[in-house]
Structures are given as structure tokens and as C-alpha cells.
Image (spheres, rainbow, N blue to C red):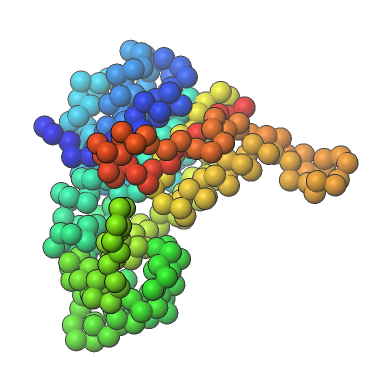
Length: 311
């Protein structure tokens, strides 16, 4: 079977994540299993890998891909935000490493039929977990104009959020907006297309915003970051791949705060808060894909890897 999603920064992930040959590792966003397959190959016979994903189709694909490692791999359909509960259910307290590869996979864009892509005519769904109740179609057709504008501006960082929200409001008076192409063409009709290297489709930011809102992506990341320090063993590693600035800022801020520890004012001669550093960052600036990798896999161009070690 061919797997449509090409994993990003694979060697950099492995170098940052793996510290114990027979360790216990978590892939919190397994997707189609690209990173997990490499982790399973490079760890020992006694190692254990816990693979999570909200998408049941991703779990099925990854289970097939890692079938030869079945004795050391456990799959759970669950959000990484619930990792503390997942580990508790498995009678695990702490692990040697956690990997998160955030965002949407190539499989979800090209094959799942849930409207993640603005280039495919699919139902406007965007749920990573089909068990969730809220769809992108419901947001687009039921929210007030101001609420839509806020979502598009906040999660998509779209300067034309007001115009887009107004156009959606006017269009849905004539009938519901129900497909990804219908919404994309509406946005393209009012937002001028950029030209030149790296130019994005006018619908990119709005689709990103709706996907983030439907799946509560930033809320899930915030919840995970608040729990993460207690889930890693001393010397354990956290590796996170982000693909847009909102997530990257959250991850960077958390890692900086963990590394700093003390939150007392700088002019206070003696620490009063008692907070000790929890992590050390492995790379202060983060790691980006090489030019060669981007040429082979254009979707890697916006990736940023940040990693930290529990102390």
C-alpha cells in the first residue's frame, strides 16, 4: 500500500526524540504512520510505542503500516490532549518521549472526503474525529457575521476577514454553503489572488481558520502543554512540529517558560516564587526543513520543529 502523507523532518525528529533504545514513546498525532514507522524501526525489541489520533481512518492506515511491529505498538483513537488519561488507562506514569506533528495530513487533504481541501469538491465537514458534533458547514451557515469574522481573523490571521464574513452571510441567504469548492470559489471571488513564488490560494487562511475552530486545535494544544511536564521522565524529550504561527508561538512560549522557571521580577534579589526550570530547549531558534526537503515535499515549507528535554 502507498501512503500519501510524506513525513517532515524525519531525521531531525528521530535525533531529537530518541534517547533510550528500549524506551517508551508516544506519537500523539500518528496520521498515516510515517514518523512512527521510523521510531519503531530504530528502537529495540523491548521498546513500546503508543500511537494516538483523532481520525479513525488514520488509525486504520497506521495499524496496517506498522503491522510488523504489532508487539510493541498500541493504537488509541483519542486526542493527544487526553494523553494523561490514555497513559493512566494503560497503567503508565511517564514516558521517554512524546512527538506531536500538528496540522492536517496529505491523506486528509486528498483522500478522506471531509472538505479539508479547497481544491476538491467535498462536503464542508473538516472534523478530524467524525464523532465530534460541530462541522464546518454548521459554522459557516449558522454563526453570526461577527462570530465568523472573529474566527477567520483570529485563527486564519486573515486581513480580509470582515469582507469574507459579509460575503458568506449574503450568499447563505440564497441557500446553504455546503461544499468545500463552493466556499473556496466564494472567497476567491472577493479576495485577489497573489502571484509569485510561495503565493497561497486566497481560500487558504479561511479554511485553516475553520479547521482550527471545528477541531478546537488551539484549545487542545494549550491543554496538552499544561499537562506535558508531568508525563515525561527526567531526560525525556518533547518534539513538536508546527505549521502555522499561532501554534508555533504557543509552543515556543511554553518551552521558554519551562526553561526559565522563576517568574519573579528581575529586580527581586531573592526568588520568591520557588519555580524551578522544567526543561532545556534543544534548539533555541527551532529547526526548519532544508531547501532540498522542501523541493521534494513542498508542504514541508512551513514546518517548524521545536524540542525540549525534561530536567
